[in-house]
Length: 375
Image (cartoon, rainbow, N blue to C red; front, side, top):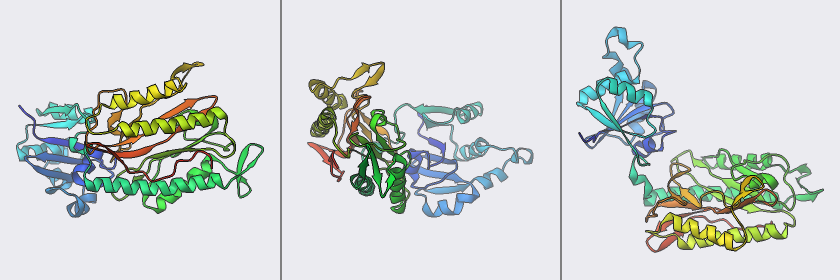
């Protein structure tokens, strides 16, 4: 039996596939069914009227009404699967295809009721998400504009600071990672975006790619700023990283920055429709190695180019395709980050990140924000 019915039970604020199909933000788990070309949402009374107005579906059903159809003894203890069972029977559905993230609890309960439940191994659940429409690209471009504004604010704070005893001071107070992150997040909030886990990591902290940063920022040491906010209106992400230094960097630190910048340019030049992602990633790995920047276990820690070149960007901050050593092939319409980096405990870290759209004969860079190391 081929399963043509699709089923998701989740919150669309957490499930990008559910939001993609309905364009409806709901904070609590809802039931989504796609059956014979029709999209159906089953919502609680709390969300019912809003769903009927806003959700891009063919029908919005009431969870409460289905609960009323249950036997009185079962009504108060009924769970979501009890109501879904009634919907399936009404629509004569015998089974469904679900995402790989579908809760095993729900799958087991449905199977006990006699339904066939299979999961889709490939991600995303709706493969159309891999190739962005013109509207989606506009949403991402707008997110990047807002991200650039916040990035420029952060860099201005660092550029305007004064050096006292190797620490940065702004307006008479020590300039800390926390202070800059607060300004970044506030600026994005005013623009209608939510920023979480923003990175402003200096010195040794910058040598750990996802260290969010804490404490005073130091002169002459690289500061990695990585901002990846999500639009509160349409759900699309921006993603951008810049690395800056206030004061005189070490000679090797300067060389590392220039190498990463050239590596990023190399990656962007190689991206086009049909290219294997591992060819892009491998070319940057080789370029770094030729320039003396090795990757591997150094002094008991993984150092060098220790992450992938990039990832897909859209309704999730990390989504396919991956620009890494894997088997992904880039296709026209993919939106991916290009963010090579080098990380050494003694030198700190450098990462530079832009977002591009894959085109037939190359790619289009959507990011508009200066790249300068010394500020």
